[in-house]
Figure 1 (cartoon, helix red, strand yellow):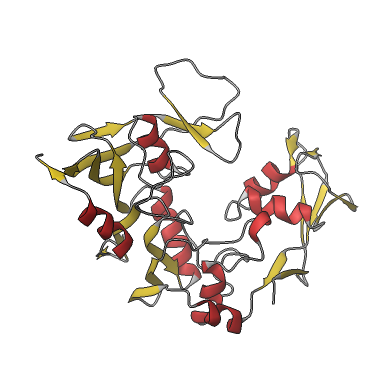
Figure 2 (figure 1 turned 180 degrees about the horizontal axis):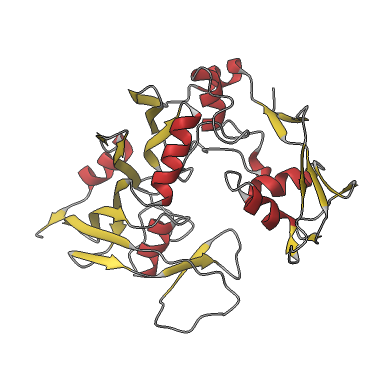
Length: 322
C-alpha cells in the first residue's frame, strides 16, 4: 500500500494584512506558520491544496498582495501500512523513553520524512506513526514528532517528541543552539589535529540538490542566500590516508559536516555526493554519536556506539602515529 494525500476537514484561512509587501506565497505561509517548512507548503501547492482569493494556486512563486485571502486545505498523509513496515524490518532502536520525548538510534539508509520525490518510500515518520502511541498530532502533520533530522545515509541518535509540550520545548532548544551534538566520521587524508571550519553554506547555484561552502574572506555570488556555519573537530586517530574525527557543531545547516570536510580537502569516506564512492562502505562514514541537553531543569546525555559498518572500516585501516 502506497501513501496518498487526503484533505483535512477544516481548512485554514489567512488574510494578508493591508500593509503586506509583495512576497511569494510559500514565503508568506512559512512566515505565518513557522512550524511548517517551505517545502511542506510547496508540496501542498503541488497537490492543489492552496488557493488565493478562491483560485487554486499552481506556483510557489505566486505573489501575495494586501488583503489577499489565502486558504490552505492541510494535507494528511495516509501512511504506508503497518504490515509493509513490519515486513521491511526497519532497525530503529529506542534508546530512552521519557513522558515527553524518546531517544532513538536511526539506521543508515532510512529517510527521516518523505519528500515530494520519495513519498512512496518507507520513512522514519511511517515507523513513528505505527510504533509510538498518540503521536499523530504532535508537531507537523506530515512528520509527527520530528524536531530535527539526519541525512538518509547518516546513522545515529535522534530526539522524537511524544507531546506538543516536548515538541515546542525542543524546537526552542534547537533554535537557541542549546543542544550539544557530537558526531564521529572517518575522513580521507590527514586534517590538522584539531580545528574549526568557518565557511558559510548556501545552495549550490549549479546543482540545486547540493550545498556548497564559501570562504567568507573570498568573493561569492551576491544573489546566494548564505548562512553562517561553524564546525569544530578533533582527530582521534590517524590511519593511512584516513582519520577518525570527533565533530561538534555550533550550527546545524543542511549537509554541514559533509560540505565542510569536503571544502577543506578531507571528504567523508563513502560520501558519493561531496566525495567519491568507497569499497569500504556503501554510505558516508558519519554517525551521530552523542546528544546532551537540559529538559525541565534536568540534564540528559545519551551516547551511541559506532555501528558495525564503521567499526569494520577502522579494523581494515592501518593506524599511524598521532
